[in-house]
Length: 264
Image 1 (cartoon, helix red, strand yellow):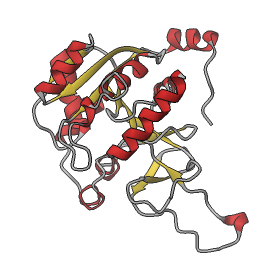
Image 2 (cartoon, rainbow, N blue to C red):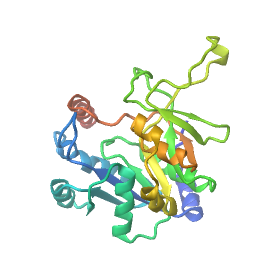
Image 3 (cartoon, rainbow, N blue to C red):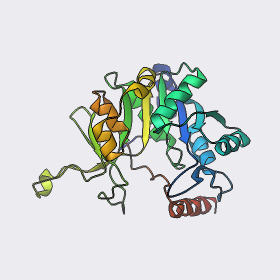
Image 4 (spheres, rainbow, N blue to C red):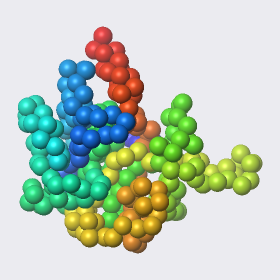
């Protein structure tokens, strides 16, 4: 679904849209996988994998980790990455907003790359930036994709999304949406998942922390619902199903094996 950009296309895009700032929020605490960003069974920390993959995106000019933990701060510095220390935040978006203020950056497009997605495709990041830049009606953008083979659409840990006729998000849910009442395959609506990657316009990102929490956001525990409930628009950009993020030690060990097989 997402095209791989050629060198000429990238050069053309760079002349048309501003390059983006990527910020990677990283927390030490995790219920299912404590100290996840610092796991280093591959010879590199998980956060280093994410930083290096993000740096490969052609439309990213600068990559910064935002954390509230000294151990992560020190680890990023150790491999030569850029990092800022932030306060405590209820979600990654508000942490990124503080990081932008700390950095005093003039970037108009900011990308939120999840700190537990070491295999995110750089081309997918470029596609997201390009999509938001081309949709002036949207305040932010995120991805949608088909489910990969073996993924269970009913899994509440995989967020689903439905969109309008202009590829703007209508709703995100942990539940299976939409419900197709007619079992006829010809009328069955496809189910799309929502990979955790966001891009924001600077003005909206700095305004987000001022938006009050909303009922649907609190019910689903999905920060992007706050955006929709307050009447802002989220553009949805198609992507080939990216590899899921790492939430558990078991998923991390599977990632380690994939890294080892690529080196063999």
